[in-house]
Amino acid sequence: MIFKFDNEEMSPKVRLDIFVSENAKTTRSGAQKLIEDGCVLVNGKTESKNYKLRIGDTIKISLPEPKVLDVLAQDIPIDIVYEDEDLIIVNKPQGMVVHPAAGNPDGTLVNAIMHHSGDNLSAINGIIRPGIVHRIDKETSGLLVIAKNNESHLILADLIKRHLFDREYVCLAYGKFPEDKFTVDKPIGRHEKDRKKMTVTDKNSRHAVTHFEVLERFSSCSLLLCTLETGRTHQIRVHLQSIGKSIVGDPIYGLKKDVLAQKYHLSGQMLHARRLGFCHPRNGQYVNFIKEPPKYFKDVIEDLRKKQL
Image (tube, rainbow, N blue to C red):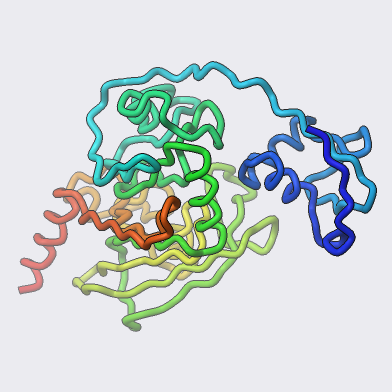
């Protein structure tokens, strides 16, 4: 695909990745990947993703040939909360990885979804992540939306980008919270020493906001409702750590001596993606999905309530 940039009014504002995203019908991250891979040329040479287009620039976009999906479809039971011709709402169990990666080649949500839907999944995020619009961590349970076609995927991704995609979590966190409601507004970036971790930092970071509400207080911990305004990696866990708190059972950001995790034999953090709300990509009507936490989560809460009596 070859384009001649001649929009004088927009010239000072249009970044290369935005232009590629709009004209190649892909997400911003997909456009950036095309640019990084040398699939985009401006006047015959490569440019950075934040290059500002000038009047007269010729942009050539070469889309790579579709690759055969080398991911095994597996008959793994999954809890489908809702499905139509455009999307699937899945309740992911704790312990399941969302998509294949090093160390997790199969047994993932993608393997299960491929068995369920076959080729009816969007291709926006590449061969390893068909249909995946957003993710939650392996040891976090709860709701995810899967796109069944590219059009729906692009619309949903845009809603997330514009903060029009409602996501609520519940978690059990150590500590006392004096305020019933509070907000953490701190940028999050990759940890300099441990690249598997995220941290609050002003260096190479992105804006991040989480709203918290205390639902219930116990002697050593509190049940929180967490509403994401942005969706950064490990956002809730990192924001709690930044104020001296941590989620019960969190193996990365939690306490070294996690008494409740040991007592209740927890295998990961007590964090559950409880609600998704958004305008449906086909008709624009607002849809709302709620899935309460799994049994082990409820059992822990119920036991803590009994001890309060």
